[in-house]
Figure 1 (tube, rainbow, N blue to C red):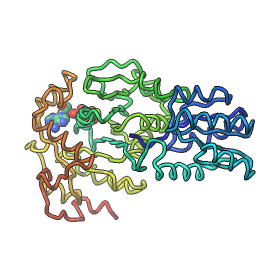
Figure 2: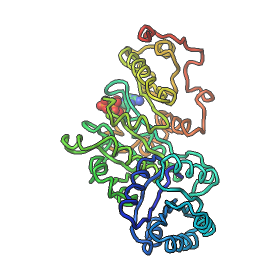
Figure 3: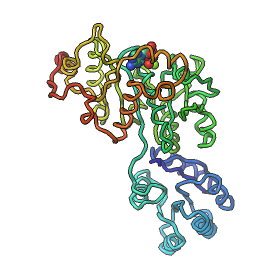
Length: 403
Ligand SMILES: Nc1ncnc2c1ncn2[C@@H]1O[C@H](COP(=O)(O)OP(=O)(O)OP(=O)(O)O)[C@@H](O)[C@H]1O
Ligand SMILES: [Mg+2]
Protein backbone atom coordinates (compact mmCIF):
# COMPACT_ATOMS: atom_id res chain seq x y z
CA UNK A 1 0.00 0.00 0.00
CA UNK A 2 1.27 3.42 -0.77
CA UNK A 3 1.36 6.77 1.00
CA UNK A 4 0.73 8.82 -2.11
CA UNK A 5 -2.89 9.49 -2.95
CA UNK A 6 -3.98 9.53 -6.56
CA UNK A 7 -6.38 12.37 -7.29
CA UNK A 8 -8.73 13.14 -10.15
CA UNK A 9 -10.19 16.61 -10.53
CA UNK A 10 -13.25 18.03 -12.25
CA UNK A 11 -13.68 21.76 -12.81
CA UNK A 12 -15.33 23.19 -15.94
CA UNK A 13 -13.65 26.58 -15.39
CA UNK A 14 -10.27 26.37 -17.15
CA UNK A 15 -8.47 29.05 -15.18
CA UNK A 16 -9.80 27.88 -11.79
CA UNK A 17 -8.83 24.32 -12.73
CA UNK A 18 -5.28 25.40 -13.61
CA UNK A 19 -4.88 27.11 -10.23
CA UNK A 20 -6.13 24.02 -8.36
CA UNK A 21 -3.81 21.82 -10.45
CA UNK A 22 -0.81 23.95 -9.55
CA UNK A 23 -1.61 23.51 -5.85
CA UNK A 24 -2.02 19.73 -6.26
CA UNK A 25 1.23 19.38 -8.17
CA UNK A 26 3.14 20.90 -5.29
CA UNK A 27 1.93 18.45 -2.68
CA UNK A 28 4.26 15.49 -2.44
CA UNK A 29 1.70 13.08 -1.05
CA UNK A 30 -0.66 13.64 -4.00
CA UNK A 31 -0.49 12.48 -7.55
CA UNK A 32 -2.81 14.17 -10.04
CA UNK A 33 -3.93 11.25 -12.16
CA UNK A 34 -6.34 13.10 -14.44
CA UNK A 35 -8.37 16.27 -14.70
CA UNK A 36 -11.59 16.87 -16.51
CA UNK A 37 -13.65 19.88 -17.60
CA UNK A 38 -17.13 18.30 -17.73
CA UNK A 39 -19.15 17.04 -14.79
CA UNK A 40 -20.88 14.59 -17.18
CA UNK A 41 -17.65 12.74 -17.93
CA UNK A 42 -16.26 12.67 -14.43
CA UNK A 43 -17.89 9.34 -13.51
CA UNK A 44 -16.14 7.68 -16.46
CA UNK A 45 -12.81 9.23 -15.47
CA UNK A 46 -13.21 7.87 -11.95
CA UNK A 47 -14.15 4.43 -13.32
CA UNK A 48 -11.09 4.37 -15.58
CA UNK A 49 -8.56 5.65 -13.08
CA UNK A 50 -9.88 4.26 -9.76
CA UNK A 51 -8.34 7.15 -7.82
CA UNK A 52 -8.06 7.51 -4.06
CA UNK A 53 -9.58 10.98 -4.09
CA UNK A 54 -12.10 12.67 -6.39
CA UNK A 55 -11.93 16.46 -6.17
CA UNK A 56 -14.93 18.40 -7.43
CA UNK A 57 -15.14 22.16 -7.87
CA UNK A 58 -18.88 22.75 -7.77
CA UNK A 59 -18.80 26.48 -8.54
CA UNK A 60 -19.59 26.26 -12.27
CA UNK A 61 -22.86 24.47 -11.59
CA UNK A 62 -23.49 23.51 -7.95
CA UNK A 63 -26.47 21.34 -8.81
CA UNK A 64 -24.60 19.27 -11.38
CA UNK A 65 -21.56 19.21 -9.10
CA UNK A 66 -23.56 17.72 -6.25
CA UNK A 67 -25.22 15.27 -8.62
CA UNK A 68 -21.88 13.91 -9.76
CA UNK A 69 -20.73 13.78 -6.14
CA UNK A 70 -23.77 11.65 -5.22
CA UNK A 71 -23.17 9.37 -8.19
CA UNK A 72 -19.50 8.83 -7.31
CA UNK A 73 -20.28 8.08 -3.68
CA UNK A 74 -22.83 5.50 -4.84
CA UNK A 75 -20.79 3.87 -7.58
CA UNK A 76 -17.34 4.07 -5.99
CA UNK A 77 -17.77 3.96 -2.23
CA UNK A 78 -14.03 3.54 -1.58
CA UNK A 79 -13.18 6.80 -3.35
CA UNK A 80 -12.90 9.79 -1.04
CA UNK A 81 -14.79 12.77 -2.42
CA UNK A 82 -13.67 16.30 -1.64
CA UNK A 83 -15.57 19.37 -2.72
CA UNK A 84 -14.02 22.76 -3.29
CA UNK A 85 -15.91 26.01 -3.74
CA UNK A 86 -15.57 29.77 -3.47
CA UNK A 87 -18.92 29.83 -1.75
CA UNK A 88 -19.27 29.84 2.02
CA UNK A 89 -23.02 29.29 1.81
CA UNK A 90 -24.02 27.09 4.75
CA UNK A 91 -26.85 25.41 2.79
CA UNK A 92 -24.50 24.47 -0.01
CA UNK A 93 -21.90 23.06 2.40
CA UNK A 94 -24.59 21.07 4.19
CA UNK A 95 -25.95 19.73 0.94
CA UNK A 96 -22.45 18.64 -0.20
CA UNK A 97 -21.72 16.94 3.12
CA UNK A 98 -25.12 15.20 3.14
CA UNK A 99 -24.42 13.93 -0.35
CA UNK A 100 -21.27 12.26 0.94
CA UNK A 101 -18.44 14.77 0.56
CA UNK A 102 -15.76 13.88 3.12
CA UNK A 103 -14.24 17.35 2.98
CA UNK A 104 -15.47 20.78 1.89
CA UNK A 105 -12.59 23.17 1.21
CA UNK A 106 -12.78 26.85 0.38
CA UNK A 107 -11.22 28.41 -2.68
CA UNK A 108 -8.62 29.73 -3.18
CA UNK A 109 -7.25 26.37 -2.18
CA UNK A 110 -4.26 26.46 0.12
CA UNK A 111 -1.71 23.67 0.11
CA UNK A 112 -1.71 23.54 3.90
CA UNK A 113 -5.51 23.16 4.16
CA UNK A 114 -5.46 20.44 1.57
CA UNK A 115 -2.62 18.65 3.35
CA UNK A 116 -4.53 18.83 6.62
CA UNK A 117 -7.60 17.39 4.89
CA UNK A 118 -5.46 14.53 3.53
CA UNK A 119 -4.07 13.88 6.99
CA UNK A 120 -7.62 13.70 8.34
CA UNK A 121 -8.45 11.17 5.65
CA UNK A 122 -5.39 9.12 6.56
CA UNK A 123 -6.27 9.15 10.24
CA UNK A 124 -9.85 8.09 9.59
CA UNK A 125 -8.73 5.31 7.30
CA UNK A 126 -10.05 6.69 4.03
CA UNK A 127 -8.41 6.48 0.63
CA UNK A 128 -7.01 3.01 1.02
CA UNK A 129 -4.74 3.76 3.95
CA UNK A 130 -6.38 2.16 6.95
CA UNK A 131 -3.93 3.25 9.58
CA UNK A 132 -2.35 6.21 7.89
CA UNK A 133 1.10 4.72 8.27
CA UNK A 134 3.75 5.36 5.66
CA UNK A 135 4.35 2.12 3.89
CA UNK A 136 6.65 2.98 1.01
CA UNK A 137 10.33 2.38 1.50
CA UNK A 138 12.56 4.53 -0.60
CA UNK A 139 16.11 3.21 -0.44
CA UNK A 140 18.86 5.37 -1.91
CA UNK A 141 22.12 3.46 -2.34
CA UNK A 142 25.31 5.45 -2.80
CA UNK A 143 28.99 4.68 -2.64
CA UNK A 144 31.75 6.62 -0.95
CA UNK A 145 34.16 5.92 -3.80
CA UNK A 146 34.13 4.47 -7.30
CA UNK A 147 33.70 0.72 -7.55
CA UNK A 148 32.80 0.05 -3.89
CA UNK A 149 29.83 -2.07 -4.94
CA UNK A 150 26.84 0.27 -4.73
CA UNK A 151 25.25 -0.96 -7.97
CA UNK A 152 25.81 -4.59 -6.97
CA UNK A 153 24.06 -3.92 -3.68
CA UNK A 154 21.23 -1.79 -5.11
CA UNK A 155 20.36 -4.30 -7.84
CA UNK A 156 20.60 -7.36 -5.63
CA UNK A 157 18.60 -5.73 -2.85
CA UNK A 158 15.89 -4.78 -5.34
CA UNK A 159 15.74 -8.38 -6.58
CA UNK A 160 15.71 -9.74 -3.01
CA UNK A 161 12.88 -7.39 -2.04
CA UNK A 162 10.89 -8.38 -5.13
CA UNK A 163 11.05 -12.02 -4.00
CA UNK A 164 8.12 -11.31 -1.71
CA UNK A 165 4.95 -11.14 -3.84
CA UNK A 166 3.45 -8.65 -1.38
CA UNK A 167 6.06 -6.16 -2.51
CA UNK A 168 6.39 -4.26 -5.76
CA UNK A 169 9.84 -2.93 -6.47
CA UNK A 170 11.25 -0.40 -8.90
CA UNK A 171 14.95 0.21 -9.39
CA UNK A 172 15.97 3.64 -10.72
CA UNK A 173 19.45 4.11 -12.17
CA UNK A 174 20.50 7.63 -11.26
CA UNK A 175 24.06 7.18 -12.47
CA UNK A 176 22.92 8.97 -15.62
CA UNK A 177 26.30 9.06 -17.35
CA UNK A 178 27.76 5.62 -16.73
CA UNK A 179 25.09 3.60 -14.91
CA UNK A 180 25.04 -0.13 -15.50
CA UNK A 181 21.98 -1.40 -13.64
CA UNK A 182 20.57 -2.62 -16.98
CA UNK A 183 23.59 -4.90 -17.42
CA UNK A 184 23.08 -6.41 -13.97
CA UNK A 185 19.51 -7.23 -15.02
CA UNK A 186 20.41 -8.23 -18.57
CA UNK A 187 17.78 -5.94 -20.03
CA UNK A 188 17.59 -3.75 -23.08
CA UNK A 189 15.09 -1.15 -21.96
CA UNK A 190 13.00 0.76 -24.43
CA UNK A 191 12.58 3.91 -22.34
CA UNK A 192 14.84 5.72 -19.93
CA UNK A 193 14.64 8.14 -17.05
CA UNK A 194 14.95 11.01 -19.57
CA UNK A 195 11.86 9.82 -21.49
CA UNK A 196 9.83 9.50 -18.33
CA UNK A 197 10.82 12.82 -16.76
CA UNK A 198 10.29 14.67 -20.04
CA UNK A 199 6.79 13.29 -20.43
CA UNK A 200 5.77 13.60 -16.82
CA UNK A 201 2.91 15.99 -17.65
CA UNK A 202 1.08 13.40 -19.69
CA UNK A 203 2.07 10.31 -17.78
CA UNK A 204 -0.36 8.29 -15.78
CA UNK A 205 0.34 5.13 -13.87
CA UNK A 206 -0.49 2.80 -16.72
CA UNK A 207 1.82 4.62 -19.12
CA UNK A 208 4.59 4.84 -16.55
CA UNK A 209 4.46 1.09 -15.93
CA UNK A 210 4.61 0.50 -19.66
CA UNK A 211 7.76 2.61 -19.81
CA UNK A 212 9.51 0.41 -17.26
CA UNK A 213 11.24 -2.85 -18.05
CA UNK A 214 10.16 -5.78 -15.90
CA UNK A 215 12.83 -8.31 -15.00
CA UNK A 216 12.03 -11.95 -14.24
CA UNK A 217 12.95 -11.31 -10.60
CA UNK A 218 9.91 -9.02 -10.47
CA UNK A 219 11.98 -5.81 -10.38
CA UNK A 220 10.88 -2.96 -12.63
CA UNK A 221 13.82 -1.00 -14.01
CA UNK A 222 13.97 2.67 -14.92
CA UNK A 223 17.40 2.95 -16.56
CA UNK A 224 19.70 5.87 -17.31
CA UNK A 225 19.46 7.51 -20.76
CA UNK A 226 21.34 5.99 -23.69
CA UNK A 227 22.83 9.25 -24.98
CA UNK A 228 24.97 11.46 -22.78
CA UNK A 229 23.26 14.50 -24.30
CA UNK A 230 19.91 13.39 -22.85
CA UNK A 231 21.20 13.64 -19.30
CA UNK A 232 20.67 17.39 -19.27
CA UNK A 233 16.99 16.85 -20.07
CA UNK A 234 16.37 15.28 -16.66
CA UNK A 235 15.27 18.07 -14.33
CA UNK A 236 15.28 17.68 -10.58
CA UNK A 237 11.66 18.88 -10.28
CA UNK A 238 10.48 16.35 -12.81
CA UNK A 239 12.38 13.59 -11.03
CA UNK A 240 10.55 14.52 -7.82
CA UNK A 241 7.26 14.15 -9.62
CA UNK A 242 8.29 10.80 -11.10
CA UNK A 243 9.17 9.64 -7.59
CA UNK A 244 5.70 10.75 -6.44
CA UNK A 245 4.09 8.67 -9.16
CA UNK A 246 6.32 5.67 -8.48
CA UNK A 247 5.41 5.86 -4.79
CA UNK A 248 1.76 5.59 -5.67
CA UNK A 249 2.38 2.30 -7.43
CA UNK A 250 5.35 0.55 -5.81
CA UNK A 251 5.96 -0.46 -2.22
CA UNK A 252 9.74 -0.19 -2.63
CA UNK A 253 11.80 2.28 -4.65
CA UNK A 254 15.53 1.59 -4.86
CA UNK A 255 17.89 4.23 -6.28
CA UNK A 256 21.37 3.47 -7.51
CA UNK A 257 22.85 6.93 -7.08
CA UNK A 258 25.81 8.35 -8.96
CA UNK A 259 29.00 9.19 -7.12
CA UNK A 260 28.59 12.86 -8.05
CA UNK A 261 26.03 13.59 -5.31
CA UNK A 262 24.52 16.01 -7.80
CA UNK A 263 21.09 17.60 -7.87
CA UNK A 264 19.36 14.41 -9.01
CA UNK A 265 21.10 12.33 -6.36
CA UNK A 266 20.03 14.90 -3.81
CA UNK A 267 16.40 14.52 -4.88
CA UNK A 268 16.73 10.80 -4.14
CA UNK A 269 18.46 11.54 -0.82
CA UNK A 270 15.60 13.84 0.11
CA UNK A 271 12.91 11.33 -0.84
CA UNK A 272 14.66 8.39 0.79
CA UNK A 273 13.42 6.68 3.91
CA UNK A 274 16.84 5.01 4.12
CA UNK A 275 20.13 6.07 2.63
CA UNK A 276 22.69 3.27 2.35
CA UNK A 277 26.22 4.55 2.13
CA UNK A 278 28.44 1.76 0.84
CA UNK A 279 32.06 1.71 1.90
CA UNK A 280 35.01 -0.61 1.98
CA UNK A 281 37.50 -0.74 4.79
CA UNK A 282 40.30 1.35 3.33
CA UNK A 283 41.46 4.81 4.23
CA UNK A 284 40.19 6.78 1.20
CA UNK A 285 36.72 5.26 1.64
CA UNK A 286 36.57 5.90 5.37
CA UNK A 287 37.70 9.48 4.91
CA UNK A 288 34.86 9.98 2.44
CA UNK A 289 32.39 8.45 4.89
CA UNK A 290 33.37 11.14 7.38
CA UNK A 291 33.25 13.91 4.77
CA UNK A 292 29.88 12.85 3.40
CA UNK A 293 28.34 12.46 6.85
CA UNK A 294 29.50 15.97 7.70
CA UNK A 295 27.89 17.33 4.56
CA UNK A 296 24.72 15.36 5.26
CA UNK A 297 24.34 17.27 8.52
CA UNK A 298 23.41 20.29 6.43
CA UNK A 299 20.28 18.58 5.11
CA UNK A 300 17.25 17.97 7.25
CA UNK A 301 17.13 14.46 8.68
CA UNK A 302 19.64 13.12 6.15
CA UNK A 303 22.30 12.04 8.59
CA UNK A 304 19.72 10.31 10.78
CA UNK A 305 18.41 8.17 7.93
CA UNK A 306 21.86 7.23 6.61
CA UNK A 307 23.21 3.75 7.30
CA UNK A 308 26.78 2.83 6.57
CA UNK A 309 27.23 -0.53 4.89
CA UNK A 310 30.59 -2.25 4.69
CA UNK A 311 30.97 -4.12 1.43
CA UNK A 312 33.50 -6.86 0.75
CA UNK A 313 33.99 -7.48 4.46
CA UNK A 314 36.69 -10.07 5.00
CA UNK A 315 38.78 -8.93 2.06
CA UNK A 316 42.23 -8.99 3.59
CA UNK A 317 44.57 -6.92 1.51
CA UNK A 318 45.05 -3.36 2.69
CA UNK A 319 41.90 -3.39 4.79
CA UNK A 320 41.54 -1.66 8.12
CA UNK A 321 40.08 -3.76 10.95
CA UNK A 322 36.37 -3.39 11.65
CA UNK A 323 37.00 -1.92 15.12
CA UNK A 324 39.55 0.57 13.90
CA UNK A 325 37.27 1.56 11.02
CA UNK A 326 34.37 2.25 13.39
CA UNK A 327 36.68 4.32 15.55
CA UNK A 328 37.78 6.17 12.44
CA UNK A 329 34.29 7.12 11.37
CA UNK A 330 33.16 7.75 14.94
CA UNK A 331 30.09 5.57 14.49
CA UNK A 332 28.84 2.05 13.88
CA UNK A 333 28.33 0.15 10.70
CA UNK A 334 24.74 -0.86 10.06
CA UNK A 335 25.58 -3.96 8.07
CA UNK A 336 28.43 -5.80 6.43
CA UNK A 337 28.29 -7.78 3.23
CA UNK A 338 30.91 -10.47 2.76
CA UNK A 339 33.46 -10.55 0.00
CA UNK A 340 32.73 -12.95 -2.86
CA UNK A 341 34.32 -11.55 -5.97
CA UNK A 342 33.83 -14.61 -8.21
CA UNK A 343 30.10 -14.84 -7.55
CA UNK A 344 29.52 -11.08 -7.82
CA UNK A 345 31.29 -10.92 -11.16
CA UNK A 346 29.33 -13.95 -12.37
CA UNK A 347 25.95 -12.52 -11.47
CA UNK A 348 26.81 -9.23 -13.14
CA UNK A 349 28.12 -10.87 -16.30
CA UNK A 350 25.15 -13.23 -16.51
CA UNK A 351 22.69 -10.47 -15.73
CA UNK A 352 21.06 -12.71 -13.15
CA UNK A 353 20.64 -11.41 -9.57
CA UNK A 354 22.01 -13.31 -6.57
CA UNK A 355 18.58 -14.43 -5.33
CA UNK A 356 18.07 -16.33 -8.58
CA UNK A 357 21.60 -17.47 -9.37
CA UNK A 358 22.83 -18.35 -5.88
CA UNK A 359 19.94 -18.17 -3.40
CA UNK A 360 21.83 -20.04 -0.70
CA UNK A 361 25.19 -18.25 -0.89
CA UNK A 362 26.18 -16.36 2.24
CA UNK A 363 26.42 -13.08 0.33
CA UNK A 364 22.83 -13.58 -0.89
CA UNK A 365 21.65 -14.33 2.66
CA UNK A 366 23.42 -11.21 3.87
CA UNK A 367 21.63 -9.04 1.30
CA UNK A 368 18.25 -10.61 2.07
CA UNK A 369 18.81 -10.04 5.79
CA UNK A 370 19.80 -6.44 5.14
CA UNK A 371 16.47 -5.95 3.33
CA UNK A 372 14.60 -7.57 6.20
CA UNK A 373 16.41 -5.44 8.73
CA UNK A 374 15.45 -2.30 6.84
CA UNK A 375 11.87 -3.51 6.71
CA UNK A 376 12.03 -3.90 10.47
CA UNK A 377 11.80 -7.67 10.49
CA UNK A 378 15.18 -8.48 12.03
CA UNK A 379 17.76 -6.64 14.05
CA UNK A 380 21.44 -6.71 13.31
CA UNK A 381 22.33 -6.86 16.97
CA UNK A 382 20.50 -10.14 17.41
CA UNK A 383 22.12 -12.10 14.66
CA UNK A 384 25.71 -11.10 15.14
CA UNK A 385 26.06 -9.27 11.85
CA UNK A 386 27.68 -6.36 13.61
CA UNK A 387 31.27 -7.09 14.31
CA UNK A 388 31.86 -4.62 17.06
CA UNK A 389 29.31 -4.15 19.78
CA UNK A 390 31.65 -2.11 21.93
CA UNK A 391 30.96 1.58 22.04
CA UNK A 392 32.79 3.37 19.24
CA UNK A 393 34.79 6.44 20.11
CA UNK A 394 32.87 9.52 19.13
CA UNK A 395 35.83 11.33 17.67
CA UNK A 396 37.55 9.42 14.92
CA UNK A 397 40.83 9.82 13.10
CA UNK A 398 39.17 12.52 11.07
CA UNK A 399 37.83 14.32 14.10
CA UNK A 400 39.96 17.25 13.14
CA UNK A 401 37.63 17.80 10.16
CA UNK A 402 34.91 18.69 12.63
CA UNK A 403 36.05 22.09 13.63
N1 LIG B 1 30.59 -8.11 -1.90
C1 LIG B 1 31.39 -8.16 -2.95
N2 LIG B 1 32.35 -9.08 -3.02
C2 LIG B 1 33.21 -9.13 -4.07
N3 LIG B 1 33.14 -8.32 -5.12
C3 LIG B 1 32.19 -7.38 -5.13
C4 LIG B 1 31.27 -7.25 -4.05
N4 LIG B 1 30.43 -6.22 -4.35
C5 LIG B 1 30.81 -5.73 -5.54
N5 LIG B 1 31.86 -6.43 -6.02
C6 LIG B 1 32.58 -6.20 -7.28
O1 LIG B 1 33.12 -4.89 -7.24
C7 LIG B 1 33.10 -4.33 -8.55
C8 LIG B 1 32.38 -2.99 -8.51
O2 LIG B 1 31.04 -3.22 -8.18
P1 LIG B 1 29.89 -2.21 -8.61
O3 LIG B 1 29.89 -1.96 -10.05
O4 LIG B 1 28.64 -2.71 -7.98
O5 LIG B 1 30.39 -0.91 -7.83
P2 LIG B 1 29.87 0.58 -7.95
O6 LIG B 1 30.14 1.23 -6.65
O7 LIG B 1 28.49 0.59 -8.45
O8 LIG B 1 30.85 1.14 -9.08
P3 LIG B 1 30.73 2.51 -9.91
O9 LIG B 1 31.51 3.52 -9.11
O10 LIG B 1 31.36 2.19 -11.21
O11 LIG B 1 29.29 2.86 -10.00
C9 LIG B 1 32.42 -5.35 -9.45
O12 LIG B 1 33.40 -6.10 -10.11
C10 LIG B 1 31.67 -6.23 -8.49
O13 LIG B 1 31.48 -7.53 -8.99
MG1 LIG C 1 27.64 1.67 -10.07
